[in-house]
Image (tube, rainbow, N blue to C red):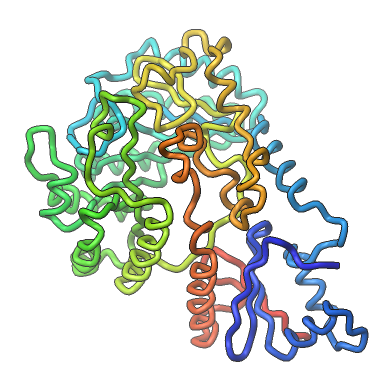
Length: 453
């Protein structure tokens, strides 16, 4: 037996912790057993390493057979996930219009709303899928998807009716700027099985209103905040704070305000990386000059952001989950439907005519651009093959990988800060264990004790 190449070790005075990025498991090993384990792995046949410890390490993929090909196992997972057909997912752009004018937006906005002909074609696509799938998920997207709320509600009702009749699980989420997310809308969304909402706040009022103004230039912060006070009672809310060098220093002021409003433990925040995407030269991002962070810089800003957020009850330490094909862009049975019925594979392509792969009216006959996405293979990249983050990243963002200027931004942050991320989670888990708040489960990760029984 040998240790997995995907282990991350953290040493503490009374125990060692090991996280395996391939399995997502975290194991706590008391110091005496850790010493016995090390001796055993070094070939000491007299080492008193408990069989239960070895069993847990094997179950968590922390130790593997000498001849185990971990890369091959990951590649099979990636291909299986990419080609899976029992789940179907659509990202539906109900409107490419938007009531905001964000200077870093990657989309070229048009005042378009999904019409009923396109709705009918979307339903035809779902009808063809229903006999072959177990689950269906929709992400409502824009522009601002609530600009096209009537279409969203009509399609939701039709999706639910069809899925229930076919005994197919249905769920939905929405990405919104939050300005139109009043309580009546929250109730309508919840009734249509929308369970989660991502809303953007880029800082305290003066900062946010500069970075996310309405089309007429006026501020949006206080309306969004008022909406969130109601929304948290109906939906799971995640606040995305898009950061770069221009606003990263102001996030604590935002967290303090949110905590004072009573949002601690009622919503969560996470940082988004602002990137000057230039593929669509008509999009605001092509000319954005806001001091964007490099991927490595953003990884460290993320740690600072999340540490601060945790202090205000707006985030909890977590570890990345293992994944297969990581997103819609590289999964065969997922599509993005534009507001005119045009089809894309990637969210970042919406509004860019050079990235259209087909049309909903003839969805079975995509053009040659589809092959680019479905042939994306991180296992052909030597840097990815040797990276400890591969099991949780699987090549990251294909959209960025295809662009020489954005290539380094394809990666998730675990690549750069894996030791810090595991250490921070361990410290939190240990605190919870000692305070009696954790048994064998902590947050989103199962934490097993290796103490012999």
